[in-house]
Image (cartoon, rainbow, N blue to C red):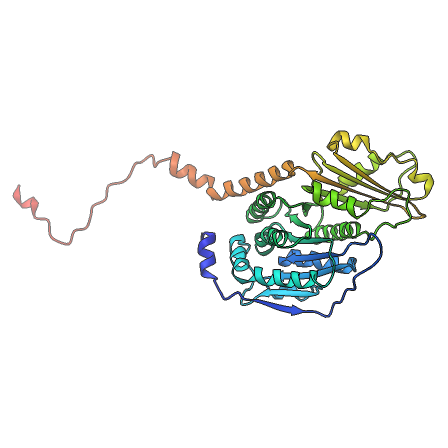
Length: 390
């Protein structure tokens, strides 16, 4: 089996980046509390996520970066950046990093700077899956590079693999998590470890991510409210508290006697994200008929008792005919339980690789032929005349 270093040498090519501009145009908005987002999709999965965000949020400007041109045909983006002469990364994170460090990082930074000089953006979102090569490998360094060189908050978003996926997927995701924690930027984790087919899981995750960006961009709630989470409040939640961010949105009508704590707990159980842990910041969004909104307690004491009593707590309360309830919990710890499951899955696969046949090992180490080893005469090239000496 080749090491990652050996694989990189075998497939080394000229990787000058190549740009492909599309016809997608997005106009800046002047509506109060609407926030423009610049989204950088990395790798196959990240570009697919970024494309879906662009379709859902008109205020999002999409840059798609990949090492494989074939996966970009269905991606909708304002700019597509391809590493010239490459065709994927073979799920090797270090190979993806080398490509990005040679030329691509300069080109990506240049294109982002050009765009932010034309339009005001409140947040940059760098998204990828965590299990592959291209996006998993370069997205943490891309996020840190953008954060270090721009005065715009950067959030990193990754998607964990299913526990049914191979050892490489688990290893890459764990490596991504280590780097994500190391760079110290706010980050979000979504999880493909859902019931049903992979395609269904991907669709649900992408839809939930699109809803999250609509919430962050301010598209889901209006200005005529009792209490508002404004741009500064959102900044405090996402950037100042930062850490791991968990969010969710639902339009299901609460039952007659259902508390907001019970309602949010159901949302968390159905969420495509690991559960919150030691929450540092809370944002609660309530929109609906006055008689429903007024009976829901936005202080959510049971949620705070279970998942962490946050240092800051913001509330958006809005009366309307339609129902919508959302939350943002920031400052969460790493999802240890989920990571340990990933590690157990990795160990299980790797331990099985050590011995291909238990029966073969048993025969070779513990058993021997009861007749012993039969004697065998060796054939000699010269005639043995020792018998003549008798």
